[in-house]
Length: 616
Ligand code: ADP
Ligand code: ZN
Ligand code: MG
View 1 (cartoon, helix red, strand yellow):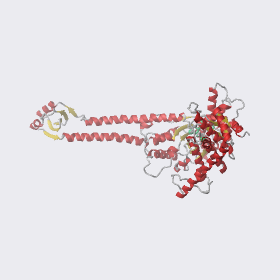
View 2: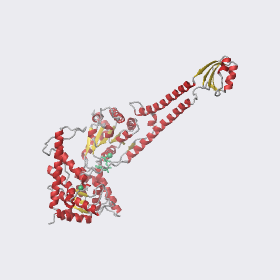
View 3: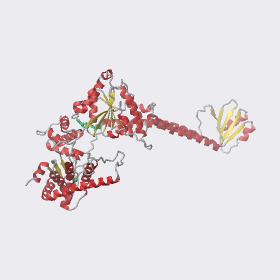
View 4: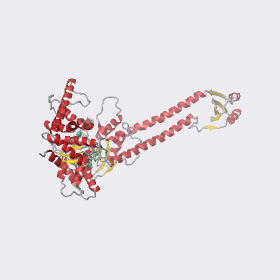
């Protein structure tokens, strides 16, 4: 029963994991396994050596002959031995000609007197200490094994130096493609295209830039919410220029095996250089490029090394390097300033959510090849989809096509589009959800309460749809569509939005005299607006003072001010609730009539709502 705020549609995180990313991830896995595999082999060999030593087997001693103890005793008798060393039952003899002979005597067999009688010097070693020495040897070897493992891991990602050979043995580990997408496939972002046209020119005709002594473009930061077409437009730059496109994701670097991130960056740039001119696309750059902290205990070593390597690679570009690195993020505020310095990502291209003309253009791109029924106008659809991203719009048309096909139709009709808008906003209907009659009644009154208040406050936007069917996370839904895209909101409009959002709970109170948990989203939404009115918009008696918490979470104001803020916020919220209560008490008859109708039909549209609400 939440009210989906049109300008605040964060509920749907469109995060299409493209197959390129998946492929790259798979390749990481292969790399990881091959690296780990090599280490395991090396480890097993060294461990084997260590254990063999521990067991008393000697290596590299080809001059030591193994003989039965009787043979050694015979040699002593024949005066062929110089000296003998005893350690437990181990007998190591040095022959007159210098050769070493090893034999094992039996437990308790006395040999020392026999040797001394025959003039052979006997050196008796404490077998305990001998084992101890061997143990130490083994320990050293084991340390060596562990040490070399760590060494290889660190080295393959270390500060400079070559990656371990096995880290680069896989021939193609980066997703390379030659996109056929062109600028004409990316709609509604004309400014971004204009700015990126220069990159296209550079990749096509680098000489023109170098001849003029102009600094060649190296890095572009694409900033925009998810689904605004960052990946798409980057691919289009490659498509327009006819160059290769390398794509990696920042999060891949960080989640990887220790020390591999930096090595991967190095390999990526090396491979890109071999295939230049080309574009390197780094999605989610904020995953690696977050501001470095000075606080010691970060454990972010890995990420920092990766970031440093990226900076080193970009600084290493010279006039001959025909590579442009395009990075995408929706959090430019968290990026390390080092990334944004001249010669790095010094160009910033913004991709906004499209306005009505942009939406129309995007809809037209994606409507190609999808037959629409007579009378379906993309203009109407564009008007109804304020706040939708490009990905949302693509999704919407795709859903509509699927619905039409499921109904055995060959054309997309208006109801399919209407349903798809709601799906994109709140998820598919969940008719299977078991809802009792009593609950259904509460949900219907709650939603109609929203709708009536929304239509009754001054400056209200039209209501598009009221539904008592569960959809996604919501039990019911009331959709209010602004008549146009809005960039500025008046104080009175914010108050109207807050009252509308409180209409659900107010209806429960007016009709049932009790309230439910169904309003939690509404409350969150209203509180959010109230707090921003106080702290950001300067719309309360606290005045035109910025009262936002600092980036590190500390409040740049006194405790008294904090208390005043809280008081203002709750006053605004209470006012909104009172406004809603007053409207619904006054229109209680309409509330009952429309809600009972909604219980029967489950969904009513804006026209029907208005005709019932405003009928005499
Ligand atoms: P981002 O990388 O910003 O999250 P994507 O580039 O992955 O967004 O966009 C996802 C999909 O949405 C694209 O493949 C395309 O189908 C559609 N889309 C997004 N923006 C546009 C646009 N401006 N024009 C046409 N289609 C778009
Ligand atoms: Zn609600
Ligand atoms: Mg993307």
